[in-house]
Length: 265
Ligand code: MF3
Ligand code: CO
Ligand code: CO
Image 1 (cartoon, rainbow, N blue to C red):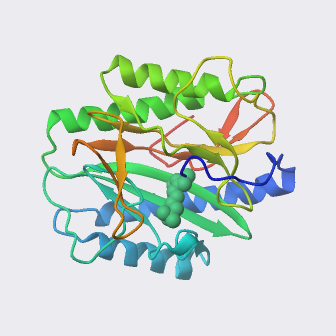
Image 2 (cartoon, rainbow, N blue to C red):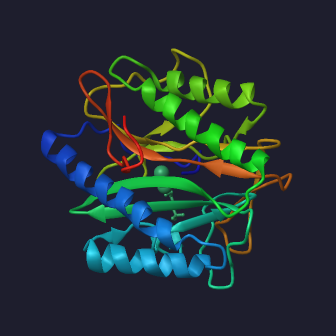
């Protein structure tokens, strides 16, 4: 989500009944990413990937693709290629080509609750420098997740992500962040991917939020495409990568609600 807009709501603590619904929504979102993998091939258009995901979410999962019509977003998923940082709009004329890196971001609503997750795909013979950005960005997400438990702070998460990114000579996008999630797609708190250990809100059991770091190969600055009002790219034209999970804070740590079968937490 973008920084700066007021959320007008306090942080919500989910009941066990709500958490069960979040588990279901999270699992469905993860399953969309698992399903779409076979279709993410050189030569396919992002419009086609959107069409397949939309059909799967609506007809197979009997769920709702949250992005569609969200603040006017025109499609059911986000597809962000190479220098696109986030919120890329699927298009039948945009064809994935050899060497591209692409983020696919899925959010579904099931029984009133949201699950939000994204991953990167490397197309064909991706250059080692691009694969490395993708890999380090995933490590940033995982290092953030590892710290989530009652008593830790949001600043702990932001700090570990920023440190890992910058140690690897990458920059962290500041204008977009993780977010509380539940019956509302984007709610408090804002989960910054940079900051200082020990600062910010303390985590409590029953909170649910996303961590979704965006790392740039070059400078951190981004620009918004004013023609479509959505597509965010790096200012310097260099690559950007992002990975996202939705999590719940448990008594002793956290539960990753959007875990895929290629992951274990
Ligand atoms: N899924 C994105 C996120 O992680 C939000 C996409 S909003 C849209 O928060 F309108 F662009 F779809
Ligand atoms: Co999100
Ligand atoms: Co998302």
